[in-house]
Length: 159
Image 1 (cartoon, rainbow, N blue to C red):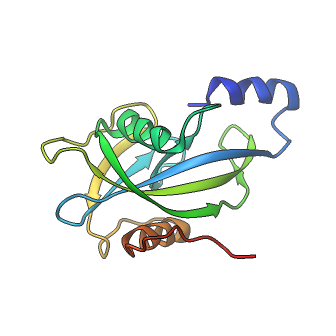
Image 2: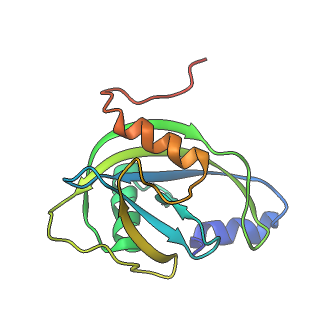
C-alpha cells in the first residue's frame, strides 16, 4: 500500500521521478533461530518485513508497526543492525524509488504469537532456518546475515 504522503508527492512529481525514501527492514528471529519472512503480494517474492517510515515516525516504532501490520506479530527491537541503500526500484505501478534502509534485529514480544498474512501486502508468511531460506534476492540474504552476526554496532559503508 502506498502511504498517503508518498501518493501526495507522486501527484506533484509524477511516477518518472526517483523518490528517495526512508525505509525500515525487520530481521525477526524466534527462539529457535528461525527468521520471519513474507511473500510480497506485489511481486510474489519472499522478502524481509519492511516499509516506509511516515513523516516524523521514529524508526524503531515504524519497524514494529510494519511487522505487526504485515504478520500480526508484535516484536521487540533489539538493535540497529545495519544502514544500507537499496538499488533503484521500479514498483509494479511504474513508480521509481530508492530507499535508505534501516535494518533492525528483532524478536517476537512473546513466543505464543502466530504469524499470518495480516494485510494485503503479504500472500503468506513463514519462519525459515537461515540455512534453508526460500528463494530471496541476494540483498535480502546479506541483510539477514548482517543481523544474525550479532555485532553490537550497526554496519554501514564507510567513507
